[in-house]
Image (cartoon, rainbow, N blue to C red):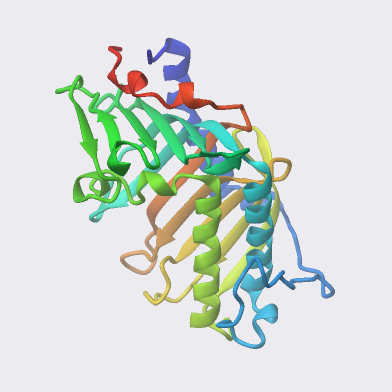
Length: 300
């Protein structure tokens, strides 16, 4: 059963201002990590289809980020079976920037264990804000007709439990990505796909800038911060600027944020999405008991 304790409530109130300060404004205090002229950006062909990339793509400023992300995805796919975290997210949906939401989250990836296939599984409990507090979401691939089991939570009809398709209009009114894409490998996969797209769209890097920063800090953990910017507004690209923070020891992303171009010159860029994996723990040993219908249906 989920109860929002006083310490957790205080933690939620103070967490995001600290993330904003270290994640968005403090880059001048960090060491810029310059690329080496001999740095190897070659990729294992089995890990990434490079056939559609321009011949000189290895010289593109995004090549280094592409290799960095591909190496991390390989690590995640081979080494990370599950994780738990408090996911802090803020998203712009249908033009409106929503409030921060905080979800205590367990995720287990699909894998083979002996003769058994362990299905991709997600269980999330909403901690805040009040309008969704107590919402519970369960998704286990191949069960429940591949639908989410959702307890509404919040201030009205909180007890109601329904089945919802992850890709339905009802589900995507509440989030930019379906729950089936919540895994860390999927997050990195989207970054890889976007990097490949941007290299193809801008092969001469006339509208692409990439900077690596050392010493970023997210949730008390030291990260490498990768900033990708497309200065001139061009909606061939999905974003004006993206900031990715990758834990130096865990080798997984702790924070991803993207911005679109400002409405007018001199105005700040507009936040599109922001996801921070707080209190992240890898390979915690999640079992079927962590993904049961009783967790959703039980009274708070």
